[in-house]
Image: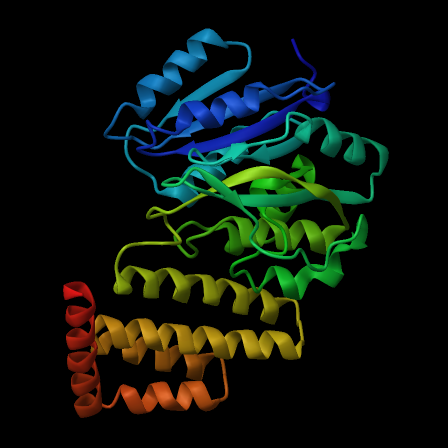
Length: 335
């Protein structure tokens, strides 16, 4: 049997991804690493052939792959944390069921860094977006805040401001299992799937808070884009609730650890504006009320953009602007 102290666990959460799950698993199985690894697949009660495909891979690689077939859909975050708790390895990586790794030495390069420096809790890399329609890779932009090794606390504010390029993309990372388990025991409120709809921000935050962070200046991940996901849902109301929940997580972490940063203040103003715009486009007064309540609870000051949103959300102006917006969209569709 493999010694868990020498094992890497790779989490793969998947739901209705029959067209991409094989690609994901192949990219992990192709890793060339001096440490053995296991693959923990959290199959979240798919309605397509995803489970059957995962089972086929498990039968072909019984010493590497374990499929956890959920009898009912848990949702991504609960599924992820259950998979994390099932991991046996000293180190943990993850790759979503529609993403794939593009560097066969990813685990090797990252594990060597963790093996050689006990002060480092997480290693991460650059990554590409992958357009499922065009099959093209593109950079998400210039990497910032990234040096070969930094004090993780210097990244905390950046981690709490995830937008187009997160400070640490968890699917590029390898991190210490015992560190994250310790954080989950000490701060269970931040790992509650009923409270928060994401897992990556708090994992990156606590690992950075506990030690150093290492960066490898190369791309190892193709991050799938161009379709609806948990962070890119297909309705204004769903987007509102996702971003409201993500904002609450970042704010509560900042408050709990007394982070004071002008960029964070600006970020939270931008998030309130974002929520108000989702409320405006949804046409739902309840979302407008929720956005304003969040602004008050978080003690976020108005800026010019927020003040304009509040004007747009006056009932009469709101109806008129939504009508004009509908006419413009109709004209664009016809042309």
